[in-house]
Image 1 (tube, helix red, strand yellow):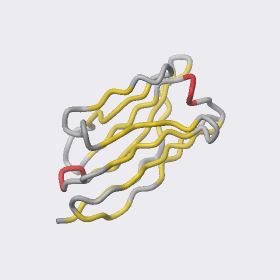
Image 2 (tube, helix red, strand yellow):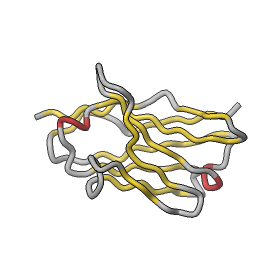
Image 3 (spheres, one colour):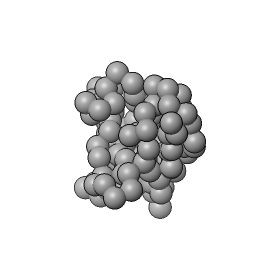
Image 4 (cartoon, rainbow, N blue to C red):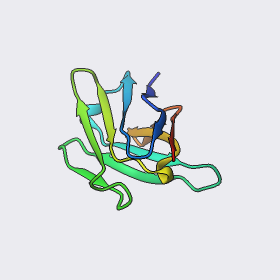
Amino acid sequence: QVELVESGGGLVQVGGSLRLSCTASRIVLSTNAVTWYRQAPGKEREWVAVIVSGGVRKYADSVNGRFAISRDNEKNTVFLQMNNLKPEDTAIYYCTTTRLNREYWGQGTQVTVSS
């Protein structure tokens, strides 16, 4: 069974950094696009960043220049480096990928930015 596991969330002060990880089992992330989303309390889920199999990266305007998505193929892991964090970045962060027209999601990791 395909499984995605996010980790690396936590409590950080404004301006701080965190690196989230999305590690997969039974699916090779390097051959699939991997997307990070986030959802804050009371808000709709928001697309954050994507890395496609060819290595192209795209970011939401709200995080562009502060977040960086990357992958380590040997570890079958995708990272989301988050710098200069703001209170509005507080959310649960999820990674997702698709294989054979089926979406797979992790359980999420909480990021809280305190002012």
